[in-house]
Amino acid sequence: MQSPVKIWRNQKNIASLVGKTGTILSWTIVRVPPGDFTDQAPYPVVLVALEGGKNVTCQLVDYDEKHLTFGQKVITIIRRVMHPDPDGVIPYGIKVKPA
Amino acid sequence: MHIYVTGAATTQFGELWGVSPRSLARGSVLSALKDADTEPKTVQALFVGNMLSGMLGGQEHLGAFFAEELGFSVPAFKVEGACASGGLAMHNAVNSLLSGQYETVVVLGIEKMTDHKPEDVATALMGAGSEEERSAGATFPGLYAILARIHMREFGTTEEQMAAVAVKNHYHASLNPNAQFHNILTVEQVMRSSRVADPLKLLDCSPISDGAAAVVLTTRKMKRSIEIASSVVATDTLGLAQRKSLTELAATRMASDKAYKIAGVQAADIDVAEVHDCFTIAQILAMEDLGFCKKGESAKKIHTVINPSGGLKGCGHPVGATGVKQVVELVEHLRGTAGKRQVKGAKVGLAHNVGGSGATAVIHILKK
Image (cartoon, rainbow over all chains, first blue to last red; front, top):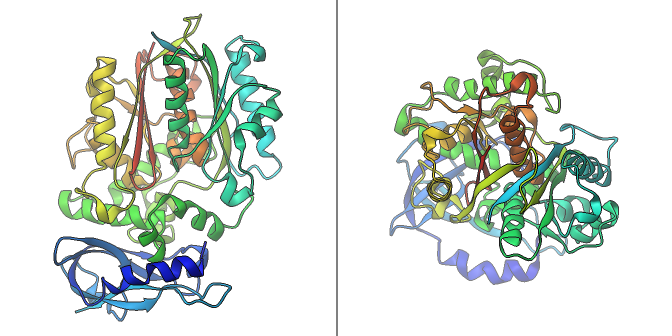
């Protein structure tokens, strides 16, 4: 469930993850999405090993099919992750694009 | 002290649009009590395994809800651990008996999923994942697809081998009158089914189901009793990204290692196992992590019969009911009353119930 307070509280976590490079460990293409993502499907969800040792699960954007491969280099960026909540606050989060 | 299952029953599993959660609970619990030849008044506590009653049905306070329906005026609890809710409810019930607090309790596993749209069910099920996974728009088929792709790369597992799991489980389900599906599948049908989360296809996935299962547990040995030789829970990180290894579900390995020790058996002694095949790759991981075969060798012939009920894939997966249904199935085999799907001479059984993408694993070992 979305909440403006929760979105606000998460901003600093998101900011700390922007602009980091990493490599794709594995991926899928979600074709049957959860309710908040129906207008985006199909989309790739990738598991990324960031430099420095942290792994993240996020969407891959601005990609071609050739980028869906083990070891593909990617960089983290800020994107809107789903529709604005009913109060109009836009939920942003981390996605990756090919580096 | 020893703990015994004296009564066990499930409802039909499937798309039960005409049946309410109250009816499912009443059907399974009264059948289990009748099976145990026990009066309802002997029940001293009720443990309910359920995941989605709040998110989908708007009903929490399930202990009181079902106690009212069953006419039980006893302590009643909801136990939640995603798709391992049923197994966790079993574990809590066993512990309550071991503590000496009660002598006879009922465990009810129950879920009503098909009243709601698939997108809403997918959203609710993602409550079992991490916030990061939800923000990514991941789904459970998607998370297991990520594990499947790593397994394919590391061990050469193929999509056809995964499809063979669904084919085998549907065959078993065809022999189980309470199963959701009775149709035989072919590898080609699985391979041709629509893609859900590549490389997983529709027929690699367990269905959305309604159903309930119940057992009566006591500290006194009675006729037809089956002993619970061990009940163990292990917990791993909630999200996949935080895991140390992506080629196993470590919680399964940790819980089963301990469960074998407590029960005094080894993997090779298990005659019949109900394992958590929410997706075909999950059964392959389970067979390895439970020690039935080495990594990448699940296609080899083994002693243990896996998922005679049809598993989650063929029998159906009402998430909170599954962990209890697995125990009901084992009881049938150990008693020798499983009909056409009877595993001949079964003496030791294992139930393996997983929550989320492997954050929770529950193992029960049963002995004749």
